[in-house]
Image (cartoon, rainbow, N blue to C red; front, top):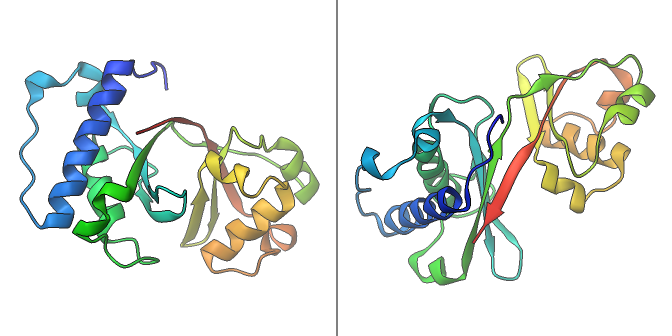
Length: 190
């Protein structure tokens, strides 16, 4: 990210996310975006993950993308609706749950490949709490946002869980050289 979002842009994105959440869960059409209300940064291509949590902090949905393909404001709306209705780990959010759902937006930087030689070298190059990690093995892929480090602070356990999320054995990263990329996020929430 060359430029951080302003506080006003963050507030607007959170409002757009809340509107998308309410419309999606209630089965109502989403109003078109008004380009005149958006700054150039919100109109430019951007990529995000939307995390929905219950007020007690329990995860309720999390969906996003890793490569930008649409304006950031639209990306926020699309992934908010998907997190509410399409996260396979959870049933769709119900209308009665809406007051208890909090929205977190993570705007991603462009992922960069992480060159490493050994499993130990890989662990040495990871920055807990800073790096989001993308793991690839052929057609299989998984990612953890940097916020996941709060729940899994141990680097080896983080990589084990990331392999398991991908559907692989947890220690695959120790036995096979995998394609790994890192990214950072600008995170804000309601």
